[in-house]
Length: 382
Image (cartoon, rainbow, N blue to C red; front, side, top):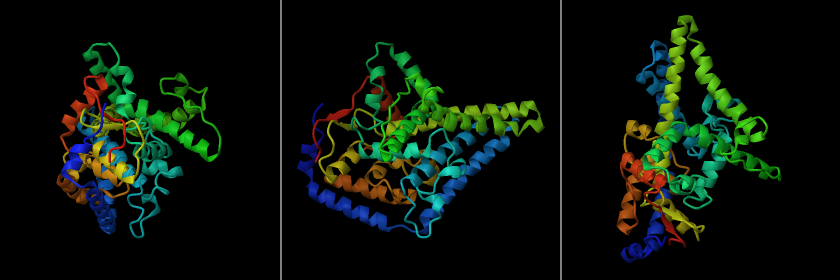
């Protein structure tokens, strides 16, 4: 516990000037928006879909890491690069943007099966991630606060090797056992608020969350898990039956392997964004907008940045600091503004953490197992 590096930073810089420059930088990058941003999004989208198509086209040849890796890459890009930024309205202000590239039109109704068919409900993702996580970063109300979510494992007396094994098992299916049920709960809660009704939250640890005797369980299985599983592990592999049962079985095997890989991949690039003994968490809500923006920097971490291939492999989550300061930018805008924000922070003595994703994985796992603690602030940070 304690206070964040307020005194040290303020001794080195005038925070009022920092926030003025931060605001000016935000206005500057928001004004730098054009058709190039939409063309870039479409390029990334095509690359992801091409990976998916190539993965399926070769999946019947036998179980192999190439086909599975391509399928996994397509699924990860669809979520982290395409769906993530569109759902934040990153492209809504591009002139003459098609509705499907706006949050109001993306993955809505039948378009869910075209735009972003995953175990995560788009409405639940918006409620859990866009609203709660981004507005309450590092607070107890943050649904993705790693240290609090894993307190049962941190406090456990099980051997360290057992904790590591359990983390690997959770990472192997975390979209299914963490994001799908938790985002659905937030979707239920948001719908209840709109209709002025009450909603009983059901933890994923509660078997009702997975069974037919509770609305959450019926919706989770009936609208998310089962349709996704049938399409990716039965229907599409079944299309290869004319080539023989072994071809169909190979396609199913590669799809299952791809699901395992994309779970591990997204676990690596997402859970490590805000965890580590150098990341701040907060007991109180921010005092003002400046405090809020500073928290986004102190509680987030970047990975190596630059280049479409590198950024795609990181799911564009390597710009996490910039994304939390300005959630509604395009992928190109994040790449442009990143070195400017980093330089601004360095000039004013504001901690700006950028490390390898593998270094961040080690620091995150240390927090998960109880070997390390987050930095907790009792009061506001500015």
